[in-house]
Structure formats: C-alpha cells, structure tokens
Amino acid sequence: MKKELLGFVLLAMASIAVANPGTKANVREIVREQRGIQEQVEEPNGKYSRFRPEVTAQLARAQAQIFGLLANSDSLDHLDTNQRVDLFNAIEEVRAIINDNDADRLICVRSMKIGTKLRETRCATVAERTSAREDGRDWLGDPRVCTMRDGTAGAC
Image (cartoon, rainbow, N blue to C red):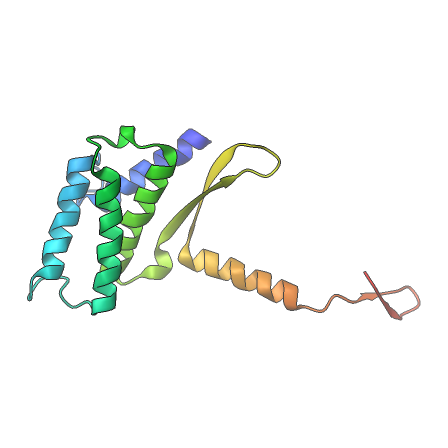
C-alpha cells in the first residue's frame, strides 16, 4: 500500500510538473517548469502577471521550497519520503495558484498510523479537509442528551 501511494505521488508530480502528463518527471524538468512559471510571473505582460502581490509572494515561497528541496539532487530518488511529500505539496500549491483553484489542491500529510509506530501518508483535497473539519465541529456542537427508558433525559 505504501509503495502504491508513493507511486501515486510520483505520478501526480510528473503530471503536475511537466506539460505532458505521460512524461516521467525528473529534477531538471521540474526546475525548468518552475523557472518558466517564475519568468511569466515577473514579466509585465506575462501569462501570470495578473496575480496580486500577496499571491505572487505565496507562489514565490512555494517555488523557493521546491528549489530548496531539489538544490542538491539530480534525481527524485535521492529524496526521502518526507521530502517527496513536501515537494508534492509545494508543486500542488503552485498548480492551485496558477489555476486559481485552491479547493482541488491535494495536501499530503505524514503521520503515525494509529496503533503502530509506522508512518503513513494521507492525502486529501483542501475541500475534503475543510468539509471534514466542519463536520467535526458540527458533531461536537450537537448536544448529547440520551433518553432514558422512562422518557426522561439523562447522561450518556
């Protein structure tokens, strides 16, 4: 299962980082794609020059993280699992900014699997995470009153 998820993450990175989804992504392709985006943001009439300054700053932070993770690596195989997840999240953030669609941005988190010392990677879109958070708040906000057999209210 872990290998399947990692394969999914790498496949998703390939489809996001490169214009051709079927192409295997490598460090040079990812960096080249990000540099192209950076140029289009900085050009006065560039494809992405429409962004507000705060969005441009957010994009620059995500790209700085990408460049930092890939700086001393010539292959994605040299990144550990946590670094791959961080890279994936940063690439997803860039994609969401460019497409102006943050709700569909996939966020992956590494955490301990319940009941073990094993770490697992869980991914969900921003919309799914928001919905789960709101559902949790709704559930906590519901009054919990149990009805006893005689019809009176009591503690659960």
